[in-house]
Amino acid sequence: MRSTCTALLLLAAAVAAHAGTTADRFTPLVVSTLTDNVRPFPGTDGKTHLVYELVLTNASATPATIEKVEVVDESNSSNALASYSGADLLSRLRTVGAATVTTSTVEASGTRLLLIDFPLEPSTRVPPQLMHKVQLLGPAIPSRQPQPPAAMNYMAAPIKVYERLPKIGPPLAGDGWVAVNGCCDDIGVHRPGSLACNGSIYFAQRFAIDWMKLNEAGQLAEGDGTDVHQYPDYGADVLAVADGTVVDTLNTLDDQKPGTLPDPKTINMQNVDGNHIVIDLGDGVYAFYAHLQKGSVQVSPGDRVKRGQVLAKLGNTGNTSGPHLHFHLMEGASVLCSNGIPYTIDSFAMTGQISLPDFAKATGVEGDWSKGMFPASSPRQNQYPMDLNIVDFPTSK
Image (cartoon, rainbow, N blue to C red; front, side, top):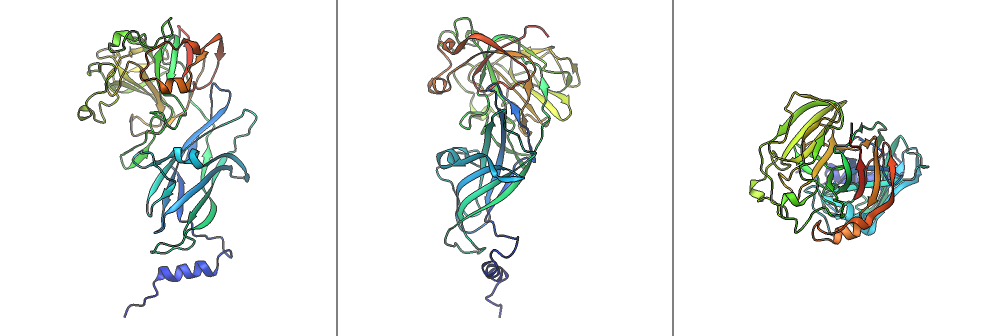
């Protein structure tokens, strides 16, 4: 007759008997990083930002409740660079299907994604490698049956810090450009937008910006905003941010009527971003431009482009409710199945900041946003524009 003492029960007994006498430890919540490195980048707020994700999987039959996650210096675990708990932790947790959650408890065999992003003051040294200190309630021993929860904490998930950043020129020219849906708000449309494709989970739009333009009256849209021609940015020239080779284009879709989104039945992975261009900038970096005007794309796959070259005109095609240029850099040629990477723009002027609370409360983009303008512009070099910055780009190459 088969013994009732299974190998798993023997292992549980061994763990209980020898707890604290070995380097090996049962860790019911498996913690890993989605990517193998993080790239710090300087924002217009004068701080250095780090953005990436953790994958948290409950490898037990007992629900695990995450209480705190700290990002620490791998060489000095007492040096916490960021800490997430309570409501802040909960707001950053997502299911693998990109949905928000109402509790930090991970069900048995369940998985969560944790959106990590934090700023460091200029005087703070960025360590070459980070670790994560996890505090939770979970089972103390491995078992196929639910166990009473116990408090525990442990270190997990090392990630290397990669200092090299792409430096590019502006994707547009002229004054009054607003970085809508920019980094790094975990409730925005871009930052938490993960997608499972090609057998993995990707965050292609981590650092995406929807560029919209203010007119002289401080408006992003004139009138009721239901016509593409009421938007000051519509038809603006879209520029190559660096020398490179075009690898993908789409140029056949009609503009979407502003104020509405297209029928979801008509959207697929090929047309969701409308007419678009992908450029290989070299060194594993690709530039992506989306929502371009039908028939305006002036390049084809295989073409070499030069920085500042006019590529197309800004439009309103694909899954969009108003004319804008969606722009981001990524690690591969796939616009959805590549991870987004940060960058710096070598020269621009910061001229204002739209209030984040006011913009979040607005039902649309209509209205006067000029109260966010600064008395004088602030020249910037080699920085990344943060969410709702108002910037002026050079008008020449």
